[in-house]
Image 1 (cartoon, helix red, strand yellow):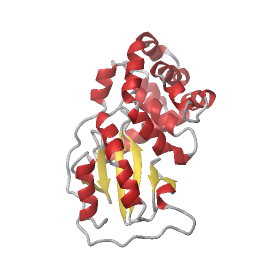
Image 2 (cartoon, helix red, strand yellow; image 1 turned 120 degrees about the vertical axis):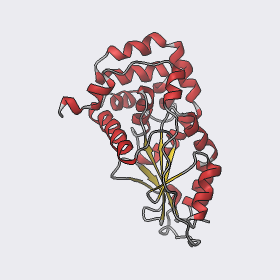
Image 3 (cartoon, helix red, strand yellow; image 1 turned 90 degrees about the vertical axis):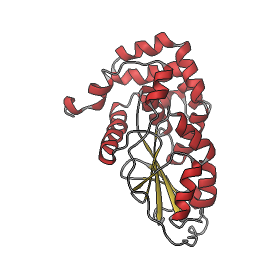
Length: 254
């Protein structure tokens, strides 16, 4: 790969290791609004194939998003999220379960989670939630958001180790970041072995891919903050479940 276009050797090699509070602020923000999704008539539920459940159906999309639900659902909800964003953590805690139970399970709505990578801890978590089976990506993301303050607390405690990671080769850097933030232990307790976690974090090609996809899609869709939601390609104004659910219902979800 041309080094001048390599996001890890250019962007991340020069990335200043920021304090936890700065990371939190950098990872959240507003996105420019556009026309909202159109209204629609109520859409009847679409049964899943016999013996399956839409809420347990996971597809990896061409954009490297992880979609749960009917791949051909008439309403396609996409969230651009950062793993170090408090507002994303709030949506995960308050919106994900009713979204899956009521709307995804009906086959009418699919939900795709994509990354907007904002800092090294974010990228490390993004790699780790992808490290195992595809069905684990969103559940592990949700658990990581619950523990977000713990990760930042670990970084404060291990500040010297975290700062020193910036000087390491790329294939070692994110392992050191994850160790400083307590990510290795966290994911190990959830079925991802320490060796597997370190192997994924040392996979420079995969780390580059996550970062590059994030940058490319954010530029194409003018996504500047997280969370940002799109419904059938149109941006939704709002970041909370109380704002997202009415948009789904106006479009025909019930």
